[in-house]
Length: 339
Image 1: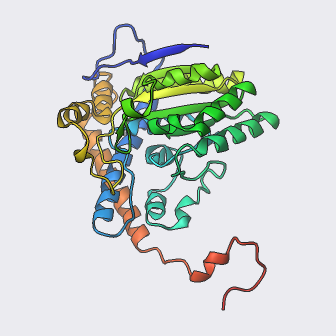
Image 2: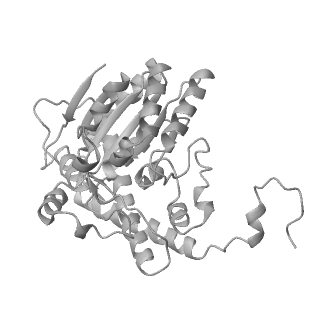
Image 3: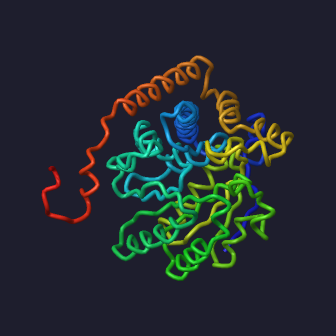
């Protein structure tokens, strides 16, 4: 059982720390692809917020400033692994192949947004806090029982680590040595409650110690640190059936949802400092220094992301509503409900 606190590889200016070495060129290529999903997710967030503000989308939970966590997690999993999200995971879902219009459909109140036919083993969005953890551990148990060489990765926020569902899931996963990774997005806020008022142990990765699980605390704005830590955790879960706990420390520079006004309870100075640590900016700086990102392709990818999101918005806005009879579609009735 191990515990590592605040693992990081690159500083705020994107400079590689002297104690860190890059494995291969393939690593840089992976990070470049992950950055593209981060940018796409950021553009999608902005569009969804605009749609909500103009009454064309329901309440939406953005992940601004937290894109590196989800994009890296979604990218590193194999196709047959199981991703169990909460509700701030759009970068991971995009990396897993979900179409952007499906994200809009879900937040627009259309159940078809939960059609994950691109990865049918993945679970849909989970809004109730921490209830996805028992689902994830049950899936991990099934994978081990059927001797499948796949892992489960479940995401949750810092507030979810105060719930019994989380603790019970960790305990069960260690008792049975299950192939599962718990990824905590510690963005410092459980809606409007700061970390110091909702958890006695503010180093959330240490909570794994109570269950005998390896815990790692990593800089959630550091794309390389996330990449290395998640690769290690996935390997441990896949090859050794060792459950893993990762706390990615970041800051929620956006509102909790579009129904929230974070300016009422956050500190302006802290918010400004957190904005300066933006993971997209840092990833670009790092990859530029490694000659793996250039201004021309940056502009090209920004424009491409805008086109993808705009096309997704048009598809979402022009999708026909479901007939009222669809209410009965999965109720098990054999009666004809077309009249």
